[in-house]
Amino acid sequence: MPTRPPHGTTARQVGRCRKGRTFGLIVNPLAGMGGSVGLKGTDGPDVVAEAKRRGARPLSGGRAVRALTRLAASSTRFDVVTGAGALGERSALAAGLDPVVVLRVERGARGAADTRAAAEAMASAVDLLLFAGGDGTARDIVDVVGDRVPVLGIPAGVKMHSAVFGATPEAAGELAALFLEGSSAVRSREAEVMDLDEAAVRDDRLSAHLYGFARSPYARRLAQNAKAGTRVGGDAALEAACRSVAARMREGVLYILGPGTTMRKVTDALGVPSTLLGVDAVLDGVLVGADLDERGLLGLMEGRETRIVVGVLGGQGYLFGRGNQQISAEVIRRVGREGIVVVAPTHKLLALEPAKLRVDTGDAEVDAMLAGHLRVHTAPDRAVLVEVLS
Image (tube, rainbow, N blue to C red):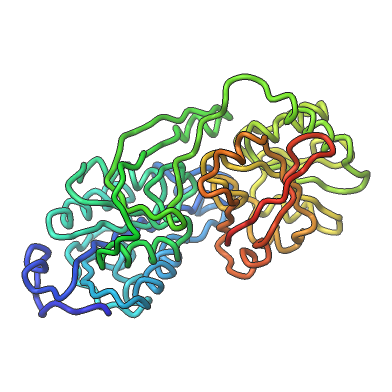
């Protein structure tokens, strides 16, 4: 159960009075806002402003509450320190915790600057830094704390290619609880911190690099791995599977195509252009929407039978919730489970650890609908059943 340090306790004093271990909570309130509106991230004030103009809503606070609620339900004893308001305090209170506020910001949310200030304020006083954000948030925290303290991410961004994140917000909360109680089920690992160049992504160029490493708690079923790079060389079976998918597209049916190199093979087979890192739509063999956001997808779906065609995120196994948030829970709900077509090369499925697919749409009902076994097309007239975890 969470414990409350005496009134007026500072970050450095928490360690002297706690009854359990202490974690620091950092919420980046801007993280994830670019996903459903097709902006591929929220790095920089201009992009944040554009996301708000397009109607984006803050998501990270709510995802933090999901993780903290799972953590609070455990038998682990802990103290929590955090930043004021949207930087963590609101999420902690909403989850029933009683946090110590160690950082107050006079101005409005400043993204990276607030994240860095919070990390610096907490690093010397906590056993774990738990943060809600994406790859950019992870990068900012690691810049400040280095390997001084373990870090664990609540997935709440658009880009989450790093290995410091829990598989879902609930998984992050459970993993944090096990780590704080010293469970033998959790080990510490050097986790990759990856990052994408958002400007390059918006120009439809993939520019990813290894930014560094961070100490991070790990349990196989609770943590995600880093995204695997695209394998050099062709895959004849996959290309043939993509041609087969394209050939079987029915007249009058709208096909939503997710991002990635596998989906580009489908559009190549159709002879239409595509957005490598965006979501496109095809109807009767014609590209009817490129780099669409949630609103654009829902508009095209109106009155039309629709299918979703997606690949598998290499190394992580995600179908939805990582880099394709435009295909939102509402889009998936309207299409239904039977309308989802998954295409992936055999080597990508074999490399998954564990050998499962994952979904993290932000909607518990939709995630539950997708759970179970899904057919994954690996070659023409060849498919395998793979379990989907929610």
